[in-house]
Length: 179
Image (cartoon, rainbow, N blue to C red; front, side, top):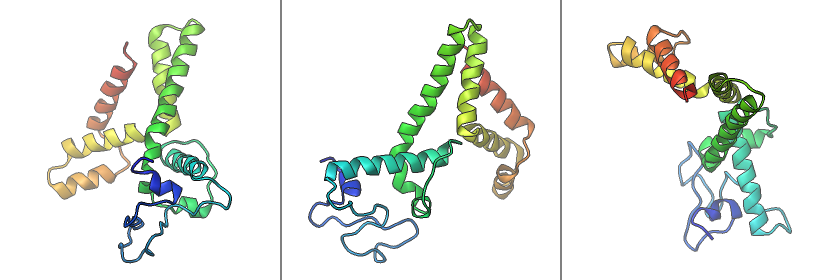
């Protein structure tokens, strides 16, 4: 059993306490329980429960990182995002494979390399809702527009895109599409 299996299997080494949920102190949690993962269903093996935990973490991470419409109950949606962090690389793999498939299909139907690459980059941006692109643009706006730290944070929170954000996006997207 790996060191993080106790979070999903419900089994902990002797003396190991469950982590407190986000925003709660360790004293708020009942000893020996974890609020981020439900107990295993009756008759479910620890291995099956661990796989269920991985799936739940993938769904929670995908709901946050992508625009893919996934169904979650209210208890799952209110679970701290940090409890699903192990699903982030799997979601990244799905997004990357999406872009790779678009690239391969574009080349297979005879599109030029640049057009296929641009479509692949656009497909990953569509799947993620432009999450990384927006973060990059807001960061560049804040770093190069504001003077005081409070002013920089205000600029980063604004929805407007400045010249610095647009230039950063343009250079990064050209770099991603260039082969």
